[in-house]
Amino acid sequence: MLRASGIGTYLQNILPTLCNIFDVILLGDANEIEPYAISKIAISLPIYSVSEIVHLPKRVPPCDIFWSPHYNVPLFSVPARKRLVTIHDTFHLAHLNTLSLKQKIYAQVMMKACVKKSDHIITVSEFSRSEIIKYTHAPPDKVTVIHNGVNHQQFNPTHSANKKQEVSDQYKLPENYILYVGNVKPHKNLICLIKAFSQIHNYTPHHLVIVGKKEGFITGDNELFATLEQRPQVSEKAHFTGFVADEDLPLIYSMADLFVFPSLYEGFGLPPLEAMACGCLTLTSNRASMPEICGEATTYFNPESPLELAEQIKRLLALPDAERQAMISQGSQKAGTYTWKNAIQKHVEIIQKLAYTISG
Image (tube, one colour):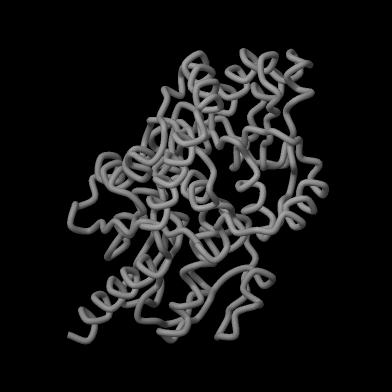
C-alpha cells in the first residue's frame, strides 16, 4: 500500500524512521518495498481479495509486533506476540448503502475482525476515533489518535518563477485557477464543486484544475463525468491533470488562487493542510474531520449546497489583498503545527508500550 494515495503518504513518511529505530521486516509488494534496505518478504496479492485473506497470514514471520497500516488485516492467526493496526477511517461502515453486497460483507467482517484481533489501534483524528468506537464497539482505551503530518520540506511556497512556469507548461495549467487535489470518488463530492463552478464560470476568468486521474479509479464518480458532459462550457474550463509527480504538486498548490475541498467524509484530510503550507487560500467542507483538523485556518461551507459553495468561491476570490494575505498566513501557521516528526514520535511510543507488555 506504499503507493496508495493517503495511506501511501502516511507510510512513506512514517516507515523510514521506524525502520531505523526498530528491527523491521517489511512484508509487501516486491516493487514497493524494494527501495528499503532492510529485511523484506515479497508478496503480491490483490488488495481486499480472498487470496489476500487466505495467503497473507502464511507469509508473516515470527515477530514481536505485527503492524497492519490498514484494516485489511490477516483474519487468521499470525506468529506475532502483539498486533497493532492503523485504521484511517470507517468510510465503508459509515456508508454501507454505497457498497455492493460483497463489499458490505467484506467491510463489516474485516473491520470488526481487525478491531477484535488487534491489541491496539492507531487512528488519525478524534473524529475517526469516535467513528471506530461507534461502528465496531472498540474499547475507547484501545484507540489512540495520532494526527498525520505535513512534509514541510516538500510543501512550502518557496519556488522560483522559472520552476513555476516549467510546471505550468508541463501540465498545461491556465493562468488563473481554482484547485482540487484528491481521488475522483463519489464521497469526495466533486459533483458539488462542478455544480458550483457552473454557476460562476461565466463571471470569472478562473478555470478549475483537478489533480486526479479522470479514469482508472476503483470507484470513479460516473455522475460527475455525466454532469461534465451535459455542461460543455463548464467542461472546457475543467482540467484533469492526470498523474502529477510528487515534486510538482507543491508548485501547483502555490500557483492556485483558491483550493477547494468538498469532501463528505475524511478520516483526516491532508490536502487542505498541504495547500495551506504552500501559501494557498483554502475553502473546506464542514463535514467529518475537517473542522477538527483545519480549525479556524480555513473557510467552511456546506458540501451539500452548490449555491453556498459558489457564493463562497466568489467572495474569497474578491477579497482585498491584505485580508487575503492574513488568511493565507493563518493557514500557513496552522499547517505548521502538523509535522511527521511528531507523528513518528507518537508511533514509537505506542510500539514501545506494546513491546514493554511483552518483556514485562
